[in-house]
Length: 257
Image (cartoon, rainbow, N blue to C red; front, side, top):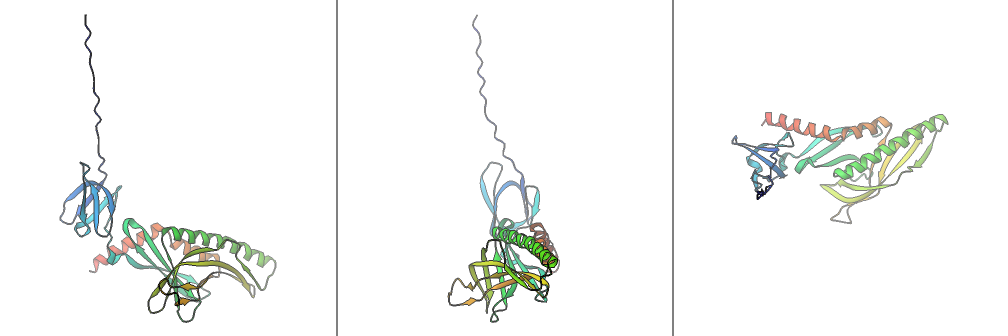
């Protein structure tokens, strides 16, 4: 008796995951996989895995990984976010933020100018540079607390010491008619006790504009009179807090158009 031979051919079944949705202004919704969002368009793949795009002007909302977001345009992406206090100067300084594609942000932390000709200076940081700066603040805050305790215990009246941590280099700027930017300025810290009162400073070297080497500023400085001032600045730069502020601001702005 001959045995029948059965051949089973397994065919792969491809399932495209459509986890995202585009909500158009005209009311139409498009299930898709979003691949890129910028100031001009939302790029996506449909259920057949064909690539396409929709101009940002036609998009009301888009949902990516379960989170609904409004498209970001260049016109409303830069805003004044908050102020932080440095009592040594007797004033508060502004923080401005720019929200770019996919919620990538740039940060402009204003501070005191060493140069009397220009009274405005700032650190101008991207996401990675902000992380470097916040880690630096954490380090000097820890040193400051430790050295202040030593100074109090030993009744130190006057003393000055350069920070033991490594210097860092970050982008900075100064204002003279317009903002002038320097891609890299060196920062170091200085612990100081005067009449039994301690401070810790962050001081930069000269700020030289990228487009004119003959135009410069003597530098910028932060002076903190207690660790609370440092911690408050660190807490203000929390990413979620900034984005919550941004989207709430957009909702309020929409009410008064």
